[in-house]
Amino acid sequence: MPADVQRAREPRGDAPRARAARREQKEGLGPAYVAGFRRSLADGAELILELDCDFSHDPADVPRLIAACESGADVALGSRYVPGGGTENWGLGRRIVSWGGSFYARLLLGVGIHDLTGGFKCYRRHVLEAIDLDAIGSKGYAFQIEMTYRALRKGFRVVEIPIRFAERTAGRSKMSRSIVLEGIVNVPLLRLAALRGKI
Image (cartoon, rainbow, N blue to C red; front, side, top):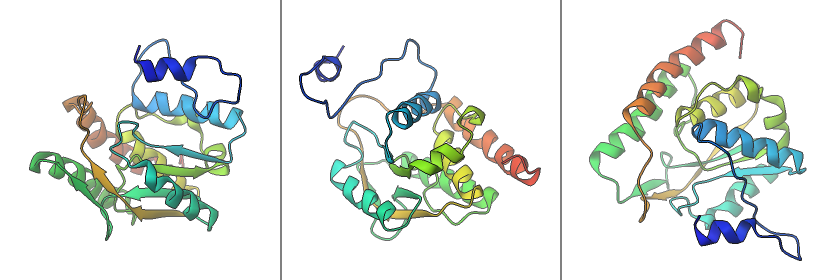
C-alpha cells in the first residue's frame, strides 16, 4: 500500500482532513464514486467534491468550484471545453476521444454542457440526495456523463468552470476499449430512459 494512503488510514489524535475508504474488490469507477458519495452524505457533508488525485485536476481550482456552488450552482463542473479551459500534454488521439465523447453525448442527450465526460465536480448535498444512486448503471467514464445528465433532468443548475487538465506524470490511464464502448452504448440508453420518463 502506498505510504500516503497508509498514513491517511492511520488513526490520529486530531480530526483527519483526509480519510481513505478501502474497498474489498474493484468494481469500476462508477461504483467507487457512488460509495464515496454515500460516505460523504453519511458524514454530513454539504458540498461533495470529486477529482483525480494524481494532480491532473489542480487542487488550486477547488475554491473556484466551491464558490460557484455557494453562488447558486447546484453542480460546478471543471470544464476543459469552455473558453479558458483546456488540456496539457495530450496526444491527438486522446484529444479526439475526449472531445468527441463529450460532443457525442451532448448531441444525443440534447444538453448544453460542453464537458460531459469531465470528472472534476462539486455537488451540493441535495443533488446527490435527489439522484437515485442505486439506479446508476455506468461503471467507467460514462459515469460522469450519467451523473451530470441525471442532475440536469432533475432540474438542477449545472455550471461549467474553466480548468486546465494536465496529463498525469506517473501511472497509466484506465481508458480502454470496453470503457469507450460503454460510453457509446450508454448514452442513447440514457436518452431513451429520459424519453420514457424513467430519469
